[in-house]
View (spheres, rainbow, N blue to C red):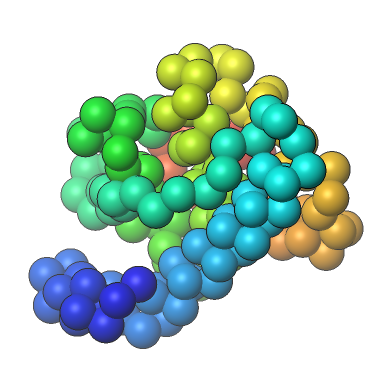
Length: 146
């Protein structure tokens, strides 16, 4: 995240350096893993930079799978960037899932298509995701836990 964007988020919605670090770590994992998968498969989309819509108000004001700005934006919730509850593994997965949703447009199919993501994750990475999913407060938290 650029320093200018981090300052703007801090001023407008109170996201601090810990929130920014969480996003940056999640984005870095998304980018490196997505790049590796795209190089080795024909079905994984190469990572791309997109807008990020962070829903800070009422979570149900925007549905989790809404493809904002004509599929050019990922949707995250403020809780996804809560350094006391979330984890970079959760952020990385949400960005990868957002890509699959943008490509397929199918809410029920995207998580299945994105399952390839988990085949190369370590036990520690999976456990970190599961712990963050257990604490998740986004509208689709039950899906993450499942």
